Image (cartoon, rainbow, N blue to C red):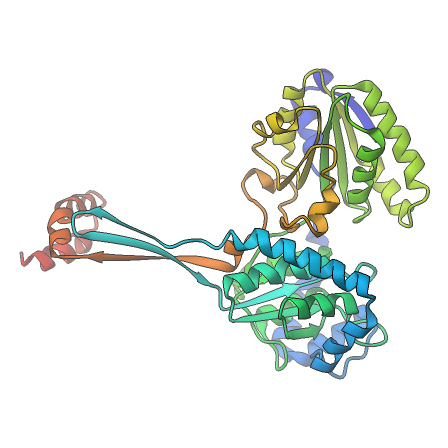
Length: 429
C-alpha cells in the first residue's frame, strides 16, 4: 500500500487520493444498450441468446422450479443452513424496527395532513452467482422486501453450468419466502426484470449488486425509455480503517484483506496516527495475503490502496468524511467518542472486535451500501427502500377559510392565476 503523510499533501493531492480507481463503464454502454434493445424486441429469445453467449449455458427454461428449490435443502450441510438461518434472524430483527410509522397532524385549523408508507408492489432482486454465490445478498435484499410488504418479489441469479443456480442462493431465497426465481444473470437479467419477457415479469424497482455490465444495465434501465427505479449504482467495495497505537495490526490487516478480495477494482485505506502501526499492518498484509486463494487479485488491490499518516485523529476523521467510505472501521481506544465525528460513511464498525465481515453477513445491518463517495449523500439499504411515502390532506370548511388568503397571495406572486381562482371558486367569490 502506498503511504502518505497527510500534512505534506496539498488540497489537490488529497482530492486526487480520495478519487476512486476508475469505475467508468462508458466503453461498454453501447454493448449494454444493445442487450436492452434486444430483450425489448425478442424477450425470452434474447435472454436465452445472451445466457448462451456470456454464461455458456443453453437454457430450455429460466424458471427455477419448486422441486429445485426444495432439493437445495438436501445439498447443503446442516451447519451452513443453520448459519443462514442465524444470519436471517439477525437481519430480520434489525430491519423490522425500520418499518415506518404513519404520521398525522393538523397543520392549521381544519387542515389535516397525513403521511403513510406503502410497499412498492413489484421488486426485482439481482444476486450475483458465479465464483462467489452471494447467498448473504439474498438475505439482505429479500428480508427488507418481505418486511415492507412487497406483493411480488422476483429474484434473478446466474445459472450454473450443470443445472440450477447455487443451492446456497436457492436455500436463502426459500428461507425468505421468495418463490419467483429465474436462472438469468448479467445485463440480460436487469433487462428482463426492467422490460419484462414472456417468462420474467416486469418490476417497478431493481435492487442488487453486480459487475460493470450489471451496473451499466441498471444505469440505462433507470433512464428513458424504460424509467425503472433502481436502488443505487454500487461500485467496487471499499473500506477505511482508522487505527491508533492500540490497534491490533494483525486484525486490521485481516479486515483490509477481507474487502480487498471482492475484486480488482476494490480499494482499502488505513488512516493512522502511528507510524509503528502503519509499518506493522503493511508487514501483516504481506504475510497474510500469501495464503489466500485470491492473492493475485488482492495484490492488485493493495497496489492501488493507501496508508494515510496523520498527526491527530481529528485529522483522520476529516479525511474519512472527505473520502465518504462504504465501510468505516474505528480501531481506536475511544471509538465511541470518534463516532460523533462521522458524517459520511455507509456502515460504521466500532471497536477492535467489530470486524467488517460481521456486517457483510450476520450482525443484522444491511451490506448493500453506497460506494464511490456517494455516502456523502446516501445511506444503506433499508426497509424504506422498498416502500414509498404517500401524502394525504383533508381541508375542511374552516380549513378553507384559514388558508385561502395565504394560498391566493402565494399563487398570484408566482403568476399562477388559475391556482388562486381554484380557491376563490370554493369561497363562492
